[in-house]
Length: 496
Image 1 (cartoon, rainbow, N blue to C red):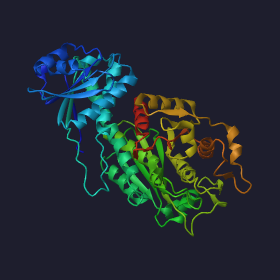
Image 2 (image 1 turned 60 degrees about the vertical axis):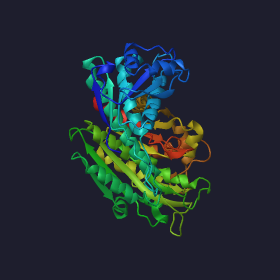
Image 3 (image 1 turned 90 degrees about the horizontal axis):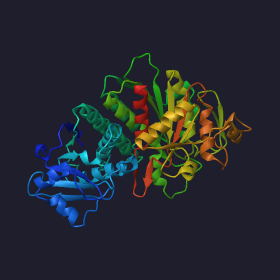
Image 4 (image 1 turned 45 degrees about the vertical axis):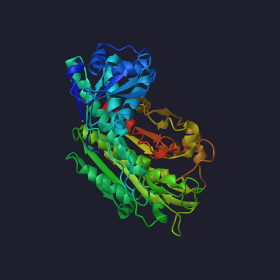
């Protein structure tokens, strides 16, 4: 989809709006403010007629498309309830607006903001959310379809504000939201691709392509020999059963001074997870193409911050591999040595995410990072604990955890902090290695995080378990999470 152009007009007069489509928020009382009344007169009374008919009640998130014989030819009514404008309501209003506008096939549209009566802070937040939703809901998957789906027609979107001093902030908020939406959609596209298309090398090509879009961005890809030379035998144990080579992808964005410590994002990139010798059940195994959701979110977040030209240094590290069974595959009971020199007894080859991440996290230390966040579809136990609404958050630093939780709340891409107590570490004891790769049936998400914590003692680190939030099973599709959270976190760090 071509980039959506955003603009802000310092007027709310209906007669000054040069657009074929206007979005008008309407409360459940049905009473129009002065701007709404002027628009209704210009459209020949069709707005009041729609309200009077009872077909449109104004409840939060309700929409109705009204046609007019004069300009603007279309008016989309969006219900705002009692108009109190709390953020939960604004989220529903934003999503409903985006869906209705894209369904209308309008190429150019204007949002008449005055009925919302937004305070400055909520106004910027709402329009950032709306910019993101307009791009998010424009996503269409057609990469492996014989006939591509029609592209959304919307190309221009404007908003009216009554204070000229606020117009720059609103425009910046719209654009920031749109760029976040672009990053989310990149993550969705990569995760939705089937495993025979989105291989480790495909992810490497996407990273190189992203690096070419900015002179502040560079990409390095390590092959299996380079990883072996570094001692990444834990990561390589996962790829032992497949003919598809693993890749360690390192994407660097230098938007700030070279001496500034970077924030590092580490993504699990298992492009298909059969479970290996510890084979998964057949039901829903097709969804294991989504096991590279962490890697997809790293690329999506880098896409967003590169487009924003964010003044911050960021490194994205992706541990990309396939986990397959074969005569050369790693067996339960095998012992491997990680890049950190820690030996690992692999009791279950389906606990492979932590095996690729531990070497990537060791590699991250060379950047002397300000923070490290790993993102992984790591455990079914996290889905049991939190469902699909929240990602699991673990951290060895309280301030980092607080910043990530705040970013999740602000972006409505929320996380919930889980315990990382040393009490759980004993579940990972092994008689034959320094650590086992699973900790038994209890607290499976916690012990997975405790395993990773052994490799992150030299820096501030957090782990996001996105097994429940990275995709939906019905209707099936990737969500692009937690690109929203990560992008907001990096925006916040750039301001700090």
